[in-house]
Length: 327
Image 1 (cartoon, rainbow, N blue to C red):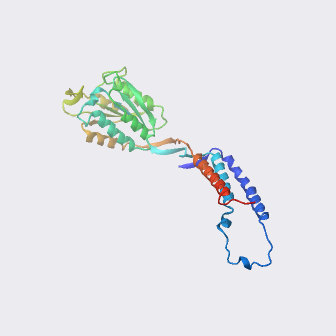
Image 2: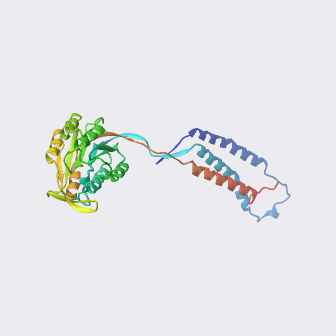
Image 3: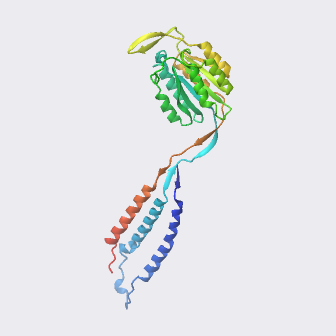
């Protein structure tokens, strides 16, 4: 954290303290009373009282109070530095299937919950990457644009649920096309989409392979992950009932999407295999990306204002009581 001042010109007022101090010293020297006596033997053994040592304290407190007021007027602000820097990173859009079948419990506790948890760990382990999030079912929308704010991204990822869309089904082509749209204009040689789905394309106006051609045109690699057990059926809970549903992953299409774009296809049959897949993708090539770090400023004048008030009150109290001057 660094401290900056919104109105640094007010610090010139500190120069006024110099003549004030000089005037005080001059005035104090002229007003010290004197008395002529024939002998000082009567006063031997009498030491200086505590008021002698504290006589200048009110003036010192006033100078400190004025200084605190000037610092408050200068408006100190705490902030993190705003900077542009080049770091090793990669641009990634995560395209996540949130169709109803992602409630299946062959991954624990469900496919979607496992994808969210392991995906969040993947995000937090890549601090320098620009990462965005696209979700899809029967349609697709952007949950988060490309960002380096991993805390915000993970929060948005955790808020994803399979009931976010009324349009049911699995529109893989739309999910890819939306992800490509989020990343295609990024000025970087390395652009990646991680597509996670548990089904076959059965909705949407865009064919998955057409969307893959679009990704290849913009030099976007698509890594595809098919999620689901190798068994023919998987348990799923619908309306409180535990049923069995068929496992229907179009591996051929997912492999073709990855092949067309220079990516790779993975199959996740349990939590451990999904975690190892993300660990392998974590080893993707990295490239220089420019990151702009923004900061949020906070006003810090209040402590100075409070200090000035306390010093003024303390000076007045001392002048009127303990260090009162009798004319």
